[in-house]
Image (cartoon, rainbow over all chains, first blue to last red; front, side):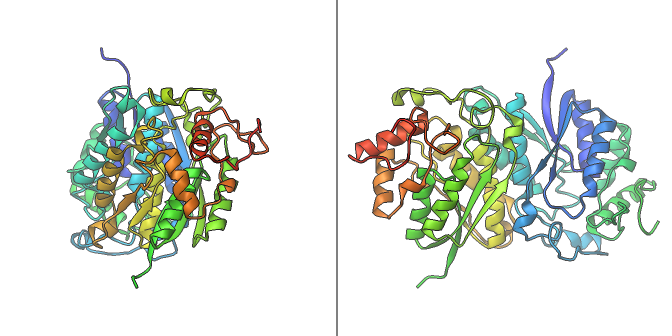
Length: 232
Length: 232
């Protein structure tokens, strides 16, 4: 028997973070889930985040408000068009309009604050660099740099001997492999929402990068995505 | 003539950040000021931040809401006693109760987000490691680690060739030297608020670490602090 290990898990309501939460639980962590209301146009994801947390039994789920949308600069928060119908191979060629400036840095910084108060040394983020590699703050070298910074930033690291670790268990997996792993762990993907541009009723568009990658991941496993799409 | 250089300056309403803002202006930066309503008990500092920004002519002043106080863990946000009457020499012996978990990391992360949208490469923070060295996230090694992380985190660094720089011009100055510098640059310290535990009317307590350091800094210059104290 080992002592309980609290961990902060970033839960967006999407497929990747739901799988990451399941992995943290499998590895014996006590999950504290953190979500953000940051001005995203796809706020339906917060209801999905709650459903995912409820289905997996987290210790606590917090939603933090922070108006990154007020800064502008992203198709996810501003009135810019979300790219649709792109070939998956083209997605990684340049950082897309859906990039939100410094989003993972803000999210991880807030997670670090909560982790320190909880006495947790472990943060989990569902970043994925392989499929799909467009975002700079999903790359392994970024994660390692954040970790180094966190271990200089905090009282618990400097005085308490805590060594913070940012876990990104999906970072080198394909979407198909992530889905297989999650299904083995009992993740209910019908609760998750990945679409960047859902309808008001929460139906996925089926055409944005996130939908296309997700659909391809299910198809590669010979499965049908249980999420609801406007075209379905 | 050089091109305009926008910069994001963290302005708390205190003495250090008011001086940092004046230094950024002296060095030719276009100042965009950022403050936070993060659950601090000394929210009177936000009125001071506004007055400081108005007096120095910033391009824009934003106040971002983020509920770090909801996480707890600090005398600045929770119902814990603010230490009073401590000897200045004793302050740096341990990280004090007024430490707010990961505060500068959260503030710098948000500054980075705004800087990226503005096309700014420069962030200014009034951190001070010498007088007073109690906070881990005011040390030069922390600042360098954040800078390294920022240059891996963002589209503008990865695709745009921007090299982010975190300026901490006060980091090795005594409080007395900071005050001399600010007075040379015309900073009106009567507008600033440093107290951790002011009255509802905004009078400084004169006994918390921040007041004691400030009073000592003015005294070392043979000056009287223009701020209003309950004991004055």
